[in-house]
Image (cartoon, rainbow over all chains, first blue to last red; front, side, top):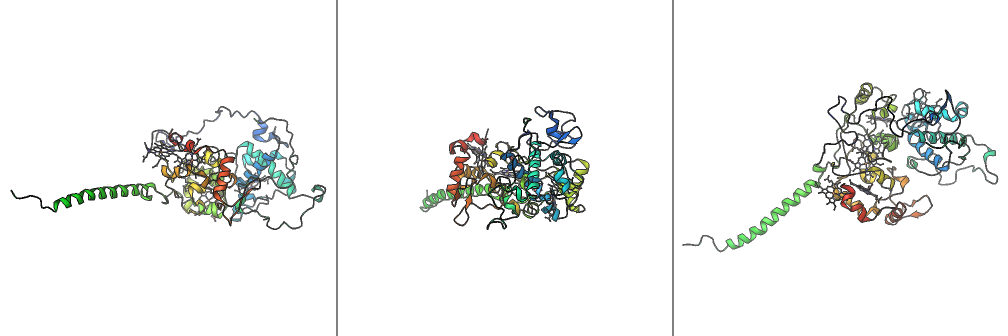
Length: 203
Length: 233
């Protein structure tokens, strides 16, 4: 009764040499519901170039999701601001470039999707850990981060003012405790800030 | 014929009846205590692992979120143990020569799985699901204890039926806002510690917060989640 003869996830099986009860998928198998027909959604590429639009509309929920996922999977190295001074980098990992360089601000949004899907140089890929929908949300959030770090006087809504100092009690560099918070994205995350075409439906 | 038993034998006989009852109860009690003790449940006993993986360093020290490694915890019954690739995301560059990490590198080279020792293990006749607990505001720490302070992982609770029911009978004592589920430093509300929900309402009392969350997250009735077929199906 305690251990019954069936397999729970990751349980050992002595029949196979590698002892895995869950067998790796044979190359070329397409599981039901996993036909990746919408190539742009799954690769971020049009032909061999990176595309520059979101495959689904960017809403406040998508932004909040992107922020949350970014803070889980990317912030350990890229930091929550995207400047590349994350905790793992402070412990000796290669320093990634800041997202606020001219080059990355000009990079099409599909490029960020591609880096997450296939890795880039010393950076590992996140295809296993982050599903495509979330990778797009992260890409949209990175766009918002770039804008927030590059805001000018003219981006301020009429009648609003830029605070010279953060209001008392506001912590500028968020501590670990804010991880997983589902608050809305930071100020300049205008939904239309990230190029969205809103045309294609979600798969 | 002379009497075989002296008069005092009556008293001894009576006393021994009580004695037997006492001895049997003590033995039963001892058996129950042993059955609940760490000796039988492995509560608080750290397990030896092929690699001395430390949540204290990775979570407490480096601030990595649980979901970075336990990717399926939010939407499946199984929390997920990270594949070797996840370790190599960082350890391809950090501590690359540490002998401690040799099994990880070997596993990455050869494709053989690392075989971790289970720490929390329910019997197979019990049905358990992580995702519902996570989505209804039960924090990892409520069941797994201070994981961010564990140099080696141990089970912080007995995982016995008594323990599950203790919460299922009164979930309001444990619930927290959904966005705090992964936060290992969350403190339940008290007069010193105010807890705020998204809509701005503030709580200073766990029971009040718990009841509000029970309502918001549509937690079923106590009868619903304590009936046998919830966990034995």
